[in-house]
Length: 305
Ligand SMILES: [Zn+2]
Image (tube, rainbow, N blue to C red; front, side, top):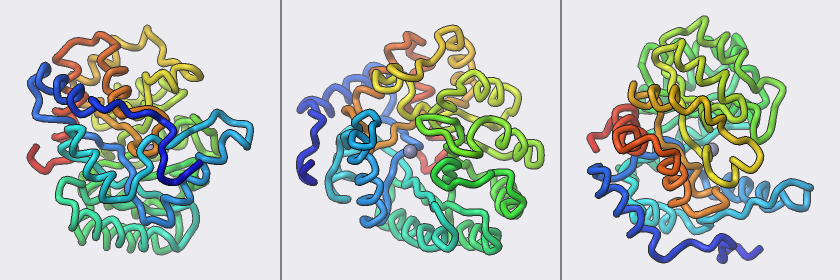
């Protein structure tokens, strides 16, 4: 696959279609809590992983927005996204501080991107989180499957304690899909919440494929949210469909401020507009859609949009 040629065909009228949706809903634009910006060598590695999906016997996963960083930021703005994040995550010790430095710099030169940070269970984790918070980190990311760690690892206690105290949201990929890990699933997360009940966890991908368990967790814990990242798209529905009977509870949670738009941009195998149209296709009504696509994320990320 050529590095310059996305194999997903992005409709030329994509920005116009998205702007028609925001106009119809009466929202100023979208707030997307789950987008990936990373140091170029890390992102290249991520892209190589997805490129190899087909040869590894998995579903092909073409990257729709395979552009350089400036172009990716420009396009996201063109799509009407007012505020977004740079989700980063380490897969080994000794990496989090370096990623955090990069994210701080990216946020400083990208004012519409929230200042994000991450962590890994290692003896220095607490000090790293303290440094990240002191430098202004407002959103954290944890990837339980890629990191291969137990979120309830005691080495993370000082991390969770400080993040809870700061009230910063943590987007956590903890469901067992699309790839399961030794510590994915609801139980490790429930254990973390038992110790730190005021944590503002944002369950990535709505907990795919454990939708019912994570929806219940969000209902039980008043600060837990779900993000819509890849949920409801044709790509995800083909293998892990969201149970229709959960939709009324999902809609109620959205009205309570606790479902937020996430997309996984730019690493998605379809155009961005498909994620938005998939959410609208649920038929939950304009009030719920405005809450998910803009209002709830704007509260969560702050930044006045
Ligand atoms: Zn992601």
